[in-house]
Length: 333
Ligand SMILES: [Zn+2]
Image (cartoon, rainbow, N blue to C red; front, side, top):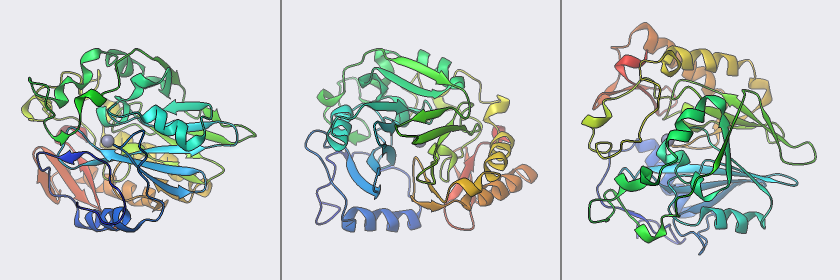
């Protein structure tokens, strides 16, 4: 049992993944061992629920296509409606869990982007929203086979132990693409605004909770930010996954470090509107000044793409002064 007094989610890594950042390792250990809000509900034992604000829950689960990686989903409980941002892989009853936390409030589901760890659970909901540039990717990934790569030919999980019987059945859902700055209404004037931050993917989006003064940043922050593309077929993890990636080629201008930098500059003009950032991976509840640090890191990468601090496969890592790193690919400048 890796973590003490509280009950943990039931999934366990089979293959050990890459060595994580030691600062993140210390942070997540402290959170999982000692955070008093931690709870695992019987209805979905694949998720650890943490309460970060009165009306903001972080839902932590395993990345099922790496050994030991973690991904966060975010649940905002508004006055009349709740909003779930990201849906992970679609193992376990996430819909039931959210209903239990919110007391079955009406729910808006949205995605930061279409990667498997953020959107493959969409099929348990009737309707999901994201930036309109996500539409082609969200549509072509509406396929029974999207999660097949997580198990081997005999149906056994490859990277993380879970019961394949807990896959939520595949069904088509309605994808609703919305423009940049679209506001989702959670009742009585409570608004959450979609903020398009391309780079990781063209339609990658953050969500700004205006009342709570926080930003759900997805994979634009800080361990994300990944720009450009990789040779996925050369990567063991994706060799079986024909649905990985985007319909846009990795060389597309909307997947560049320069595009991400420019989007972050636009976001930096709005630093007066939020104080904290929550992300898809890594340490949470970060100071909003991180936006400025990422702009500086992008500028350094653009000025000298060869001056990376670490190389993992074809993924280059630029260390950030406050910890963490900005990953990018050679073709993503
Ligand atoms: Zn991710």
